[in-house]
Length: 384
Image (cartoon, helix red, strand yellow):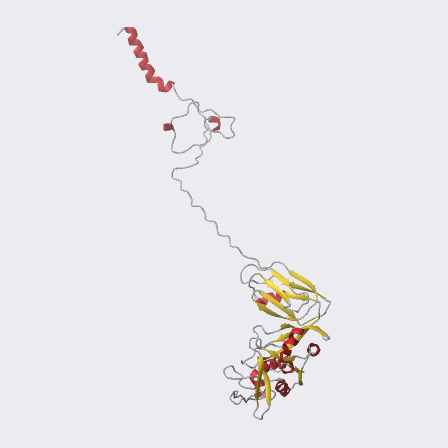
């Protein structure tokens, strides 16, 4: 090897020894056009130069040095997502008020709720202007109010105020109102209602209601004793039984044969309790309306539509011929709609019906019902 070649090899070795100092990677330059300052390299560093921690900003200017900001660490734990609470739907109480053109011809003022409510709070929220007293009855979610009286041609406003308490949900938050003009007068007596105690004590129960109107508190059986009660079975072989014009015929309970009583012994029983009572036959709607307008309840005869209605005949021990009818039933007329000269309908307490208080009967329908067997079924007792 020549001297020239030896010198070149030596220079090359020296060059290799000092190359890490001479050739350094260029420093990052500031990106003055960026809203945030980020690291920019002319020659990006190799992956061996990046630590496990990610850097979001590096400022190498010694006059404005910024500490690196850590955005994630390898040991950071993720929190469990929060479960949202369920939204509970609470239905709101709604109120609807309805009535017929002629109030009282069917069911009075009906307040219909969309859910079951506390009855006392609903009745307390009800009002009518001008004020009229009345009675409430309920059938599920329907509250019915029946007035004791109305004047024909007068305008009435019915209101249900806020705060009716539902059994679940939210109470009504507004006042519900309806206005109507009474197309007919109404008068209804404050006659208490009783269901009959025995299977055949409809006459006694009907009189019991009329007596209670005057403050006389009796039972079906105490009245039965005044009517006359010495029960015996119908002797069908000889066709002999007792006289319904004189006493109660047969047994009052349903286990044994029995019939009932007609107008005369019922009037006599009312008199025995201190009332002036008279019995009538072939009465008219005007007769009923006149007595109701004067404040007198009337016990009327008819029939029970659930039984076959037919004529029955037998004799008494003395030989008197008795004509009666199967299905005989008695009710108490307690109110009227219309004028006494031309009544539209009547309110009736039926001691046997499921919803027997203040049943509404059209005037012509009630009289037709009573006249099914003429004078035999068209009987009445006015209790004064």
